[in-house]
Length: 291
Ligand code: C2E
Ligand code: MG
Ligand code: MG
Ligand code: MG
Image (tube, rainbow, N blue to C red):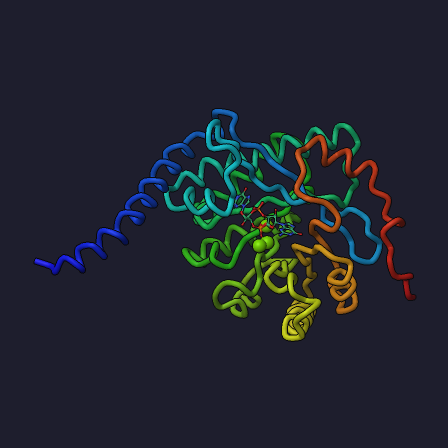
């Protein structure tokens, strides 16, 4: 038997752990079919051209309002849905909902020709053999040209069946669906992906953006990521821009696209279209254009 002291220590540490596990299980249970109960919705955060400040698209970000828990963070529930496999059903709902919005906004004349809505795609979705085929079928059912949709894939999203993921993404990029590598630089073997993946855009993670003003190492890392992307012919979007200084630095190193609270937070669909209608690019050109 363990000495009393050790027993007490185990007691002290294992209780919160068990509670955490229970909490996780409860949340995972509540998550099942949440999209079918109308508890989920998409927020849209605009993406802008860094030089002109024109809107070039938006990222769709999933939101979950639980009836008693309130709003649950995607940082919490997405990993749970990935672990349980529910991300497959939820992910399909996200794509369908995004397509429904594209269809509606196109009909209302709100979307320009080069506007896209980007959807985040999880590893388990990409692991499906018919992911690309199903997606293209859904686009054609709704009569949406594929270029209106874009995908964001994280490095960890490619860890599983890399070969199949590449096949799916190749098929999609051949039909003009842009693929972005999300959270670039925060996962594993980033450089290998540059070689093997059919992607058009690198997304610099907020991790490299948030301390740009204070931290010279971050400035050098951001610069290196932009150069790296450009050297293989890809564009760069920076996420999580909150200050003018961050935006100015990223623009100065050639980053093409911007996203962040500085411009707009992720917004409900109606607020997003209102934001688009009132956004005046010229109001936000802090530095004069140089030829
Ligand atoms: P992500 O795809 O890297 O999305 C960017 C996150 O940064 C979003 O968090 C967004 O709200 C937040 N953000 C944007 N601008 C700023 C800023 O200026 N400052 C700060 N502090 N944050 C900013 P969110 O919405 O909580 O989503 C977290 C993650 O959850 C996403 O990271 C994505 O990986 C995942 N996620 C969200 N929706 C979906 C989805 O539909 N499917 C999948 N598979 N994953 C999703
Ligand atoms: Mg994303
Ligand atoms: Mg990201
Ligand atoms: Mg991120």
